[in-house]
Structure formats: structure tokens, C-alpha cells
Amino acid sequence: MRMRRITAILLMLLLMNKVSNARAFFGYDFSGQNQEDRSSAMQFRFEIENQYHVSVLMGEECLEVPTSGFELQIIPQGSSLFHWLYVGEDQYTEALKSLNSALSAYPEGFFRNFKSAAGDTRLQFLVGDRIIRNGQSYGAMTASDTAGHSSVFLAANATNPEASVHHALWHVIEARILFKAPMALKEWTNLNPEGFAYEEEESVLPGTDEDPAGWFVNEEAKQNEKEDRAAVFEAYMTKDDAWWDERPHLQAKLKFLLLRIQGAFKACP
Image (cartoon, rainbow, N blue to C red; front, side, top):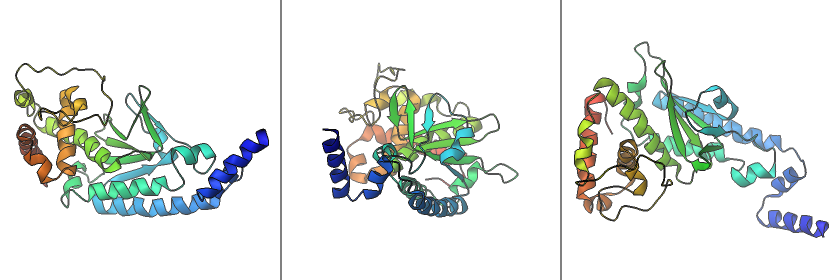
């Protein structure tokens, strides 16, 4: 019986053109393939850093950067079938391609706003395998430190990585807006329906259905003001005009955000 199961596993992997992963299951080290992927990822990393004036860390490099209420999990690349099932051999490269595509949507020079007066980069992207908070998987998370550095953590297994980047970047953008003008977002709740109150609890999972009434991008946005604004900004960066034309309430929220961005940034999305 045991031999039949092993044979079935091998046949499945062969049919999927994943012979290397079958070898990994039995302890075969295919670090050569892994090195090739890491080399490709490093190339994208340097291109992103040079073009957008940000810092990029990958894998175990991220472990020394503090998180905030979540865990960035790093699985040794190419070490087991477990890694293939949850991430894949070339997912770091694919994650960086998605990051590059997302950042390219912002105006030239936009990310220079996050440099210090001395020219140091204060915005960094950290790519790991998975992000877990309260037992749930997320595509991206953010954290900051007392030195003014903002960190965007990205999961290589994110289902919609570009949207996750935009969503997380809003939280970084918002922090800068409030740093420059602490009361800039005070009137946000006036854009919600009369009598509405945020839930203030993480009772809704990411990627939930849209709000049929059109006041919110999705049910998740009803949790708190920060998630509401992040959802609007993410939609701005990912939805087409036809989607926006049907949502006048969200258009008002978007206009509110864009005016605040223009007041805090030299180049605006």
C-alpha cells in the first residue's frame, strides 16, 4: 500500500512536469535551480531599487526587520515539496515582477518623497513567502520604526500581488499625509452614509464581496477608516472608468483622498 501511494505521488508530479519537486520530496537537493531563480530575482531587485529609489529585501534578509502584529514567514527555497506546494521555485522572481509593475503605475519621482533630507531611502519592500496575522493569510502588510522608515511586507504567494502593493502603499502614503497635516483626514466620516459606524473589528476577511450600496469598495472596508481609505485607493489604482462611473459615493471619497495626496506629495498618482 505504501509503495502504491509513493508511485501515485511520483506519477502526479511527472504529469505536472515537476520531476525536480518529486526529487525534493525524497531529499534531492536542486539548489542549482534555486540559485538560477535567485539570480533572476536579484536582477529585478536591483532594477527596482535603481528605478524607484526604494530598498528591496528578500527571504532571510527580511527577518531582522520588525513586524507589527503579523508574521512574515520564510521557507528555505528549494528545500522540500512543502515549499513547492505553498510558494514555488520562481515565486520570488514573479513577486518582484508584480512589484515592479505596481510601482510603474506611479508618476516618475513619486517615491523620492520618501527619501530623507540626506538622501537616504526610507521606503523598503520586503518579500517573503507568506504573511500570517491572526491565523489568516495576507498579501501585504506595513510597519514603521521610530527612525522614519516605512516597510511594506509582501507575500510571494499573494493571489493578487499588485492590488496588495497598492493597498499597502496607501497606509504608507496616509502616514506621510498625517505627518504633514495631522487633521487632514478628519472629515472622512462625513462621506459615509448617515448613521454609519465602523465595526472596528477584524471580522471580515480580505477579498470579500463588494458593498452593493456603493458607499464602500467591499465589506472589509467597513471595519475602520484606515481600511476604508486603503480600499478606495487600491480601487483607484486597479479599477477601470466604467467601474467608477457606477459609484458616485466612492468617487467623492476618491476626490477627497487625491486632494490630500496632492497636498503632501510633489508628484501624485
